[in-house]
Length: 213
Ligand SMILES: [Zn+2]
Figure 1 (tube, rainbow, N blue to C red):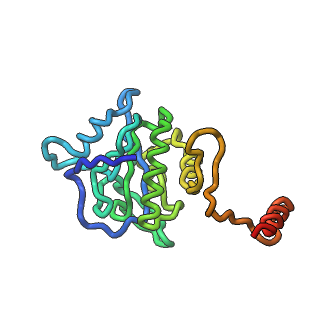
Figure 2 (figure 1 turned 90 degrees about the horizontal axis):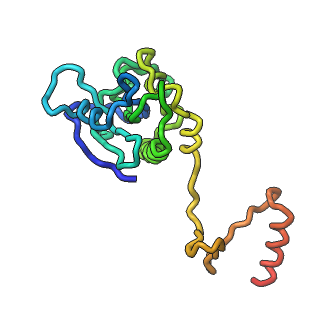
Figure 3 (figure 1 turned 180 degrees about the horizontal axis):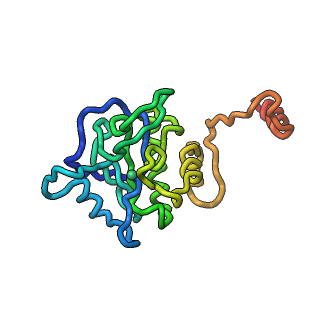
């Protein structure tokens, strides 16, 4: 996954910390999903405008392409608006300066999101959770932190997303030549669980392994 940097004019360098991640959608007009270019120019208009200034850290397009970043994580983007959520037992308001905003191109009230969007979102959010020590409970939809907004909407599959976040990829031997056989390196130590979790098979394997030590 790659990240493309296109800087928005709309941000503030004052930030408390990245305690939350807030998921959005870019919306639609007359049943047509807003274009990626349209969203970029909304966050980075050709001419400076004084009203309706909005931005988010990231935009994930529907089609496979690099994730777009428009505001640095360390800066405050303007995506949450009037909002509130309890963080570590304290009810916090106006969450822009405590969060990273991620926009999904689409309208979750009308259309499902794409496979690529889930993959990219999971990849990105996993990184940010680790980098800023953000717990899964503080990854929320815009609709949860304010009653004014409907995004990412009923079509956003939270279960699929959270399953992806908690899944781990274990580095290990791979089938390099594609013949379906995975060869363990000679020096690789295979750890067998000890105690009551061991199956009889494992005990037998361990016994024979012991004979050749
Ligand atoms: Zn939103």
